[in-house]
Structures are given as structure tokens and as C-alpha cells.
Amino acid sequence: MEIIPIFWPYIPNEGILEEIKDTLNSRWLGQGPKVDKFEKEFGKKFGYQYNLFVNSGTSALELAYHLIGLKEGDEVIVPILNCTAGQTGLMRRGVKIVFADIERETFNLDPEDFEKKITPKTKAVVAVHLGGIHVNRKIFEVAKKNNILIIVDAAQHHEPTKLEGDYICYSFQAIKHITTCDGGMLCLKNEEEYNRAKRLRWFGIDRELKARKNYQAWERREMTFDIEEAGHKYQPTDIDACFGLAALPNLDEVIEYRRELAEEYLKNLEPLHKVLTIVGGSYWLFGILVEERDELAEFLKINNIETNMVHLRNDIFSIFGGKRLNMPNMDWIEPRYLYLPINPKVTKENVKYICEKIKEFYVSRA
Image 1 (cartoon, rainbow, N blue to C red):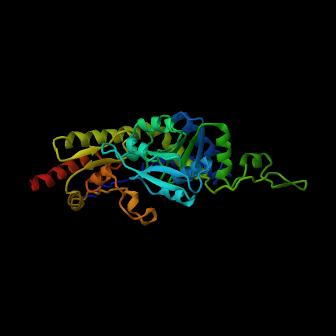
Image 2 (tube, rainbow, N blue to C red):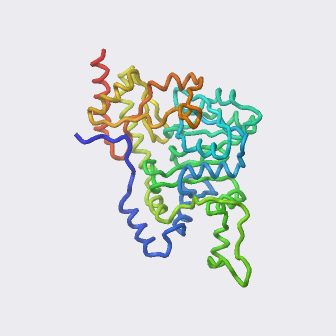
Image 3 (cartoon, helix red, strand yellow):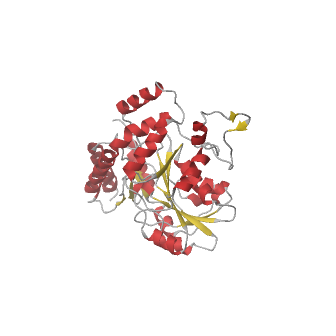
């Protein structure tokens, strides 16, 4: 039997090839008109006005940190269970990372523990839609009450709707709902920050001004542009945008298919009282909470079913201290959570087979 994969990219081949053919017949392979077009189409689909396409979701987060002006000694609260990529960007700025516990029902930031962790040095909170599940609305109420900026990490949440928050960061890495092979989007609230972010994306250079000067750096013994703030190399390419432009029109169908797979899981797992499910929102991950998690994972592997924990609690990594903090919910979840396959390669028959094998595992141990 062929292995049922935990992840598989959505690749609309014909649309991508058509877009790339058009690009290969132009002068632009790097950042060009397709990047601008993808930003506009994304904005129409999701409801944002100021969208900045970058080369990764991590770059979107790091640009948000830069725009806020986070510096050494500032504190930023983040959920204990998350991809480490965003936290390393905080470390490089000398920011003190404050971990907060998560909810058992969603694996997202627990608003009560978030509020307990606030100090006078708290400048921002990173609210992560882990697995595509919506964050608790109370987080925004607590942040507003305490005058704390909200960076929304929507790397795993591609529901086409405008999200609440000060800085919204998306990822288009290979296995997300739609992909640009790698890439991200930073959605901003005002034109001033948007223009600044555009400069920061490309070394600090005003690319539009440079274009108006026909990309000439010198004119009649005068510079045609200046650099006033040290920027980054975060720009994407038109090739990246080709993937995004081909996939974006199909996003609703991609999410709907994942929802149907999730419904099939829920229907078949409901009789198994030993299995709790963690899923919702835009259905990027399908999680379960079970006893004997490691033994179940081995059993499923033997039966050609891939599983994964995807993320580990961040506090156990050496760079973050390498010591388990007191996180009651995370401590309870840690030995129990596991993610099952949910992606374009998986069929409903695959889901039924996976559920049958989970049932077989627990019946054999009854």
C-alpha cells in the first residue's frame, strides 16, 4: 500500500505553467509586475488594502518586528507551542521572549495566561492561528486594554477573510493551503507603514523612485535615490508570484476539500471516546489527543500512515533555555497530541482507513 502522507503541496500545474510561460517571455524573473499583481489579487480576496509580498512568512514576521521598533529589553509574549522561526527573529533583536500557556481545546494562546504574563515591558503579543484554528477573541480584548500591539501569525490560516490585529503575517511555504514554493505576506493598516515596509523589503531602497529614474543610480552628477534606513533582502520573485496567482482563485475549493476530509475524520472517530480531536478554521492540520500516543504513531507507521507532532513546545530548545516551564495545559497536551494526514493527496477512503487503524489499535489494547 502507498504511504498516506501527512503533508502534500497543492500544485495547479496548468495554471502555474501558463503564468510562468508569460513571465519567461518577459524581462522580469525577479521582483516585477507579477509580484505587484499577486499583492493586489490577495488584497481583493482577503479584504486588505496594504499588502506586502515577501520571500517567507518568517520575513513577514521580522518586518513586523522592525516596524514596531522592538529592541533589547522589550518583552513579547508568544504561545509555548509554535513554529520556532518567529521566535528566533525576536532573539536576534535582543527581545525577551515570554512564553504563555495554550488552550487544551485549540492549542492556541490561552488568554488568561497571556494576561498574567503582561508587565510594563510588554510591547507586543504574537497570536498564532495554529493549524488554521481561530485564536480566542479575548486575546484582542486583553491586548487593547493593556495597549499592547498584536502581531497575528496566520502562517497556517488561509481563510480568505480580513483578520483583526495590527500586523497580519501569512506564509506560502510549500505545504500551506496555497504555495509560492516559499513566500509570505505582511498586511498593514496604513499607507505610511506600507511604504516604509516596501523600502525595508528591498535593502532600504525606494524601488518605485528608482523605477521612475529608469533604474539609473546616477544622473548629472547627482544620486537618483538615497537610503535612509538599513533594509533587508526580503523581496520575492515573479516566478514565486506565478505560483500564487495560479492557486489563489482555487483557495475556496482547497479549504472546502480539507473541511470535507475533517468531517470524515470526525464522523469516523466520534465512536472512539479515547480520541479527542483538534481541528477547525481553515483546516490546515487535523490533531488528536490520545493515550499511548507514541505507540499509536508507531502502529500507524507500520500501516503506511504518516503522522507527526509538527511543532514541539519551544521552551525545551536550548536557544530558549532548554527547560520545561510551568505550563499546565501544555504539560497535559505534550504526551498526547498527534497530527493525522489532511491534504490534497488524501482521499476520504484514506481517512476511513486511518480511522479503522486507530480503532484497531485501541481495540487490541482493551
